[in-house]
Amino acid sequence: MAGKVMQAVQYDGYGGGADGLKYVEVPVPSPKKDEVLLKVEATALNPVDWKIQKGMLRPLLPRRFPFIPASDVAGEVVEVGSGVQKFKAGDKVVAMLNSFNGGGLAEFAVSSEKLTVKRPPEISASHAAGLNIAGLTALQALTEVAGVKLDGSENRKNILITAASGGVGHYAVQLAKLGNTHITATCGARNFEFVKSLGADEVIDYKTPEGAALKSPSGRQYDAVIHCASATPWSIFEPNLSEYGQVIDLTPNARAMWTSAVKRLTLSKKKLVPLLLKPKGENLELLVSLVKEGKLKTVVDSTFPLNNAKDAWAKIMDGHATGKIVVEP
Image 1: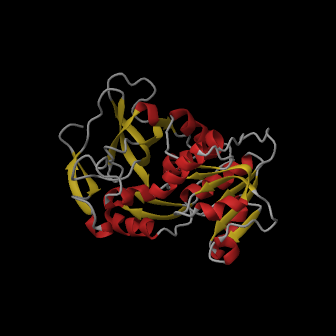
Image 2: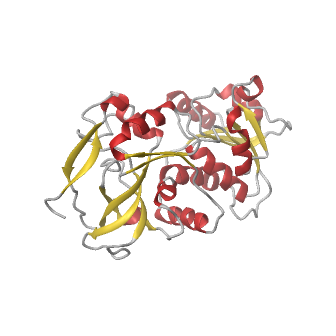
C-alpha cells in the first residue's frame, strides 16, 4: 500500500490532553520483517496512553513527535512483511502494538507477528481490542505473581481487587473467579451489581470509611491485592494482609518502589510488588480462547468514531469508565 494515505489522530508534543489531539492525514505504514499491516477495526484506550502524552514516561516515550497514540487494536490483516508465516491477508486478528511506535488511533497500523493473535469470528473487534494491556496485566498479576491457578486446583485464596469496575479490574475479577478465589472488590456504589455479576463475593464502596480502609466485610485477610487504583499508602494495606500477603501494584509510583525495596531488604513476609507488564503472545491467545469459550468477557463502556477521538481521550482521562473505552475508524 505504498504511497497511500490514511486518517489518524496524533499529538505534536507533551501535554494538551484531549485538546492536544489532531485529526490528520498521514501515509499508511509499511510492514517490515516479521510484521503485519492491519486495517484497524477497533482500538481500546488505556490510562497509560494519556500518561505518555502528559510526559510521565519521558524520556522513553514517545521517541519522537508527532506521535499516533494507543497500542491495543483489532482488525484485519491486509499485508504481511517478509518472514511472516502465521498470517495472511484477510485474517481477523487482535494485536498489541509496539508502545515505542504507537499507531493505534489510525485506519491502518503495523504490529509484530509475535504479539498478533487470530481472532475467532465469535469475538467482535471492539471486544477483542480490550484484551491486550488490560487483560494481559490482570492475567500476569494473578497467575504469575499471586499464584492463582485458573483451573481452581490450588487452595482457595482471598483476593482483593481495587477499582474492580475499570479496564484491568473487570478482567481481574473474572479471571480470579476462574481460579476459585474469594474476591473482595472495591468500586463506586453505582457499579456494585455490575462487579458482583462478574464474580465478586464482597463489594465495598471506596468512598466509605470501610472502603477507604480496604476492610473485608467478612473480616478476611488478603493473600493478594490486585491494586488497580491510584497510590494507596502501605499503612492501609498491611493490617489487611495475611501472613505472606502481597500487594501487586499495577500503577507503581516512586513511593511504592521505595516501599517494595525496603520490604525486600528487611525480609518482610508481607510484600509490595510493582508490576511491569511483560506481554506474551501465548497469554493473549489464552485470553482470546477464554472469551471464545464464554469464560471471559470484555465490557465496553462506550465507543467513539476516530474523528471524535478527543471525547474518548477525555473520558479515559476522567478515570471512571466501566470496562473499556473503544475508538472505531
